[in-house]
Image (cartoon, rainbow, N blue to C red; front, side, top):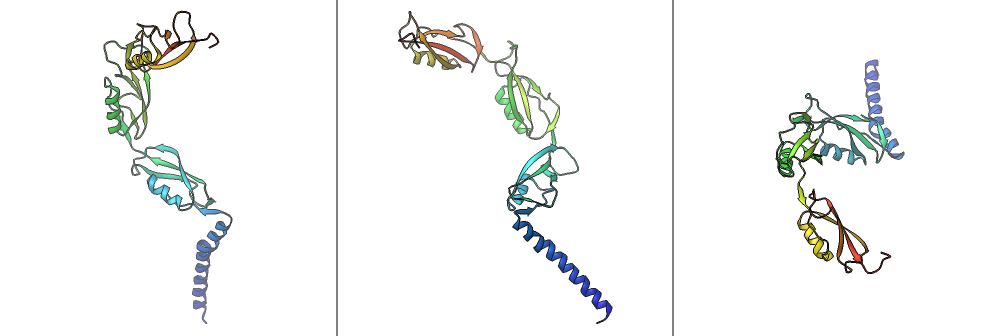
Length: 236
């Protein structure tokens, strides 16, 4: 056999050994020790990536969300680990590319209107906070401010904080009423009811003998009104 054929055979055998190691021996070894090969999920969206790693018994968690105009929107642009073998049920960390959008002008909109506008812009409401000083010239649940501010660039899918004008209501008088009727009136006025019990010399059991806030006060709609209900015995 001439030397040329021997070299060719040697190359073929070497390639076969490499393939055998990469696709049979190494995977079998890691399978025996409970490890799997990390799939490449770069340029996949999250649904595709989760499906890809699930076949290996792995899962995904998001390390960070950034904006990079060189990559398609909502695709994975980096992963950790990037390759190798890991134990089954391990997590693959990913960084997702998300395009930026502007916070729309939602000032002076009602809370429901603001939520709808933000949803259409690809954003959500992270938190609703009530302004410390109500603006009497505006209605209740009207957006007075937003953080980040209108026009700011944020990642799509981000949440914003809304500063809302409180919706105030007058607390009705329920002292002297039975507990069921008192709760009905307070709930109709937009308040939540908290019951407390105690002995009263002046009111029969089951009737309200005190309330907080007191009747006639202005309070935030949806806030709690505490009522004290008379009982038969002082030890309550």
